[in-house]
Length: 372
Image (cartoon, rainbow, N blue to C red; front, side, top):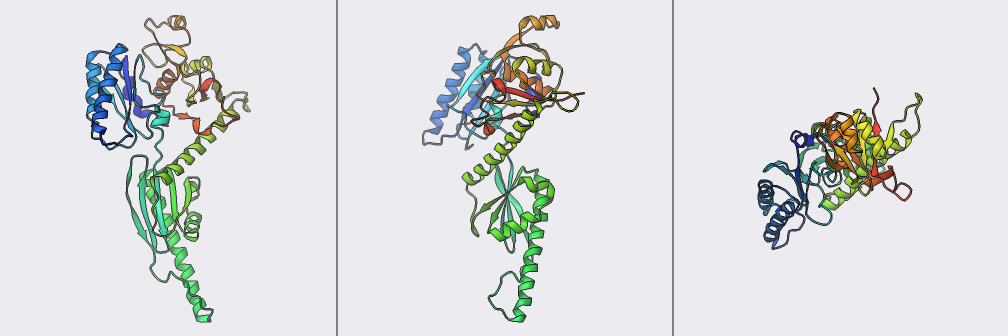
């Protein structure tokens, strides 16, 4: 996950209000329930010591969502009476809405609740062309179409010699149209920067298009065996997106596991455990942060200063480094702040967690390292 969108959160000092609002319920009394949520979140923040202006800003922001048709939810990050960032979520917050007042914004849950929001181009293919649709957890819009040769496109059952010539022309038309669709789909992917390409149609048409896609896109293409004229349901797209995210997380976890062993130069390019990660963050060596959401080290207390690289396991360590002001913070949120400062991405490895990997990385926090 590219964390650049979080930069505004680290341009201002804390403390911060972090609120995750569940908008997944759309019952008849939705407006009243969201009004109650607004009051409850403001009350919760006030109970944790938040200033009145920030509580009011959060209450007003949630009140403005009373009529929202967003399918999942919204995160709100506020300080000094202002909402600084309010990204939409791609999944509802587990257990409903919640709020926290802390020295750092609670950004770690975004790795699962906002995630990459995999952008998909769905191509509905037939023998004459294709329609493209752009889909994500919050987007559904037309993305254009391509029309191939319109004649001839159907085979006959005749075995007459003259008909065999016709059949050859049919084959040529199919191949031409598949190439046209593949080219158009490649252009669409480049323009939209889609992460995933879903081919929908009958087996022959899907395979023909996939075979003609550029090699660089092959690992982004999946096929959905649906009949002519059918459209993918949200559940179909969500399943394809989830499988893609799991595969990517699994690949990163494999890189991490391989990086535990020294490379040809004797360098270990994977680190885990809070002390090792804090040291890597101070030295700006985190290349990618891996977070397992249920890891016990995620909420381990570390100490932070005003700058992202002012980070230590013990408060006395910061004083030794010359930092006069320090605050306690969760390890996962402190490491994410450091990752944002050095333009390092982060990924939740929850989709890849299995029975034999449930403790990887150890404690729930790990990193692939960069070296000078």
